[in-house]
Length: 388
Image 1: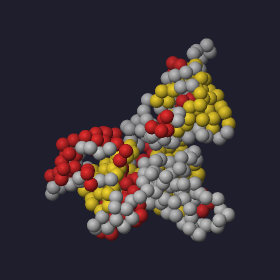
Image 2: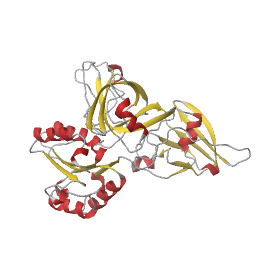
Image 3: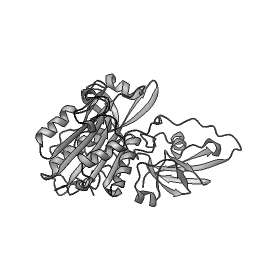
């Protein structure tokens, strides 16, 4: 189930139906051209890519899905994941569509620092097909009240979600609780103001600034449990909300989930996406030496119809993904932190244990799917299939 119909208006009956936006598919990279780079704050930009008509189906997506960008910096392949910040464009005339992401500079961040000056109109970069299930299953929006809670660049998927919620129904409402250090750090400040002007009775914005005094004390300072409970008691009534979308660092997401659960909000109505886990993303396979006579796990990888085998030393404690990359450099991954789900595969034989999982749903786990970046063999032989 998805928010959008997969059919194109006026399409000939002989044209096969397109896949549903948001449907789980193998992540694949294509080279796209940067169309525009727009400053958002002093340390954040919005980057827009042109998608040729021939690739329109590959980049059809739900609001708030993400893509990975891939390039080579300082002689090393680097991948970073960014949420799509604009509502999907669906065209029927074959004209190119567009994708937009927001990149905020992280202190010491190799890719995010380069992106502020290295990405410019006309530049070509590898962009992964959209992934993620953050907003999947959100169908009937009539008379629904949707609330987003974001911190910093966690606003990016909620921008696309807000536009979609408000344009797909004339009776839906969207409320945003958005925390930053100061007004200068607020990404999409003008866009949010425009949204409020366009839908004055259906949009509510609450900006919480941790280092800038606001008129209302509840909107000043860092969001902790006490402040969040105050907000739920005075500004946002959880009993009046149908769906919650949380996006930010793990600490904020966990706090919101705990407080919402404590005030009676069912878990199935709380969706979350982590902006970062604090771990440095994997760039390439970590070198591992397989010594003669050493105990090893035998890992078999099925990818694009081809089976590859690699030996993984027991004492290396490496992930299935790291081992797979030594024989299949094209194995899909993006964040390598258990957040995005790009490296998802199904265990066909053997067993593994996962360190972290912020991406897979319970039903996927029951069917044997794992995040290979977080999976470590617990049996002598493990077979994983990326194709199923």
